[in-house]
Every structure is written in structure tokens, then in C-alpha cells.
Image 1 (cartoon, rainbow, N blue to C red):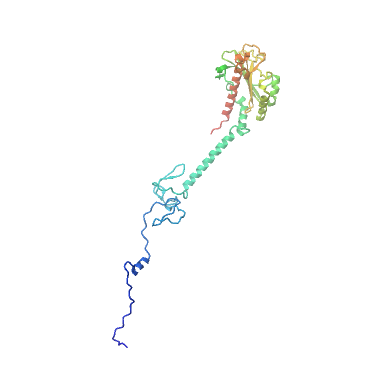
Image 2 (tube, rainbow, N blue to C red):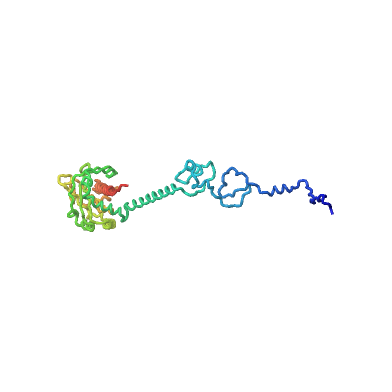
Length: 361
């Protein structure tokens, strides 16, 4: 038994293993396993291109996942000076927004601002208004049985009492290129008949042909050429028919060629004391007649000589104007006289109707 004064035996310490050269010590192992504190944030770099996976610190691409927009670039991010999210200037055009960012990738679209929503709504309203205006304009324009057509038809029927005589029958009518060989013509008004009905104004057969459309008013005036050797009566028969009635009459004239029949020639208007004083039924040499379908009007012109010579067989203006025609009316240019005046009065009538139906835009 040991004595009390003797020291206790030292605890046994396991022998320390020998360390091989290059081997890791326990303290180094502990240090290696201790958590590493987070490093200071690195400077931001440009975001990877859309559709590519970001690489890790070693440069190895991470597993593929959808690229997410940078919150700093969202249109809902705080506005930097200049009013642009993220402080990057934006150039606005009427196409897609173009962002200047020093060559970086384009920014994905994000939430729209209230101003952009309002602008889009305004453009939508304006576009709808333009389209609606175009549709309305087309609805008002002349068309088969359209409101514009009916309005123009009605206006044309009222011209006989709405337009002064000097405008319906101008004192002078220019006929550039209207004569034989496209020679110019100038016609001077020498007589205007009082407006009247159609009783006694046409031969019996033509009266029967025109009866289905009725007779609202008949206006007539007689013109002479610059040499005062030819006289031509122009007539505007305002009918009582609607558009369907005028189309039916025009169709009959076309099918039966009534405008070429020598027994359906309109009568001239002879006025005493003028060059047309002896311009009667026997002096009719050529004529033209046109049934309008866009107005309740029949336009005609009949020409002859001012010296009162008779004509055995009047010739339609269409035939008298043909090259090589040798009849007396053709050689005298009376077909050109009748057709030239009829065409100009028909065009003037349509132009006047168009002016009366124009609406301010």
C-alpha cells in the first residue's frame, strides 16, 4: 500500500502516432471541416443571355432552368432620375420599344405602366373611329340601292326647280374636241322654252315609250354653232319614276335599240326671231337620247340646219359620227353637234348632283 505522501501515478497517455511526411494533422482536418463564412458579394456582371444556364464559380454550367428577369429591370421597379426604371434611358418609337443599354441584351417585357395602358386605349379608340368613318363613308357613297344612291337620285329629281336656268342651260357651252376630227366647238344659247309638261312635246310613238316613267317637268333650250348654220335643241325630261323604273326603261332602250329608231326622234324647239325659227319636225337631221339610271332624267339632243332644209331620213348621232360616213348629216357634222351637247349636259347634270350631295368631312 503506498504511503499518503507519495505522489499519485501519472495517467497513462496513449502514444501519439507518428506523422508521416505530407500527411494532414488533426488541427488541419478540423479547420477544413469548419463552415466557411460567406464571402463578400462580387461586383454584378451582365446577366446571361436568355435561354442559357448560368455557370457556377468554377465555370461549369449549372443544370438548365428558365432564365428569370432581373427585378432591377422591371417596369414596376423604382423609377430612377429621368423617369426610366433602373436608370437606363429608353428611346420610344411607334414600333417596339428600343432600349439603349450599352450593348446589353434586350429587356424582357414586364408590367405596363398606366400611361402606356391609356395610350394603347386611345389608339384603339382612334383606330375604331377611323374604321367606322370609312365604313360610314362607304355606306353614304353611291351604291346599288344604298342610302347615298337614293339621296342623289332625289336631289337629281329636284334640280329642275332648284337650279337657275342659266346654270342648267348656260349661255355658252364649250365643246373642246367635240367636232369632226376632234375639232373644238362652241355653242351659244339662242332660246329657252318655258318649263312645261310633256303634252305635245314628243311624237305619239315616243310619248308611249316614255309613258311608264311619267313626266314631272320638261326643260328645253336651243343652241347654235359659231357659224350659226346649225341648230340643236337640248331636252331634260324629269320623270316621276323611281330608280327601278328608270332602270327598266334604260334596259328596254338597250335591248330594242330604241335610241336608233327614226320614228322615235325627239321634237326640236323653234323660237321666233332666232336662228332656230324654222327648225321644225322636217328639219331633224341627227339625234342622241340617253336614259339615266342614277337620276330620274332622260337627256336628249336633236340637230338640224338653220336654213330650214328638210331631211328625208334622220340619222342617229352614233352612225353619223362614224369615220367614212357619207350621209348629209354626217358630212355636215350634225351627229357631232347632237352627241357633243347631249354628253356635256349629261356630265354637267351628274356633276351638279355630286356637288349637291357632298357632305363636310
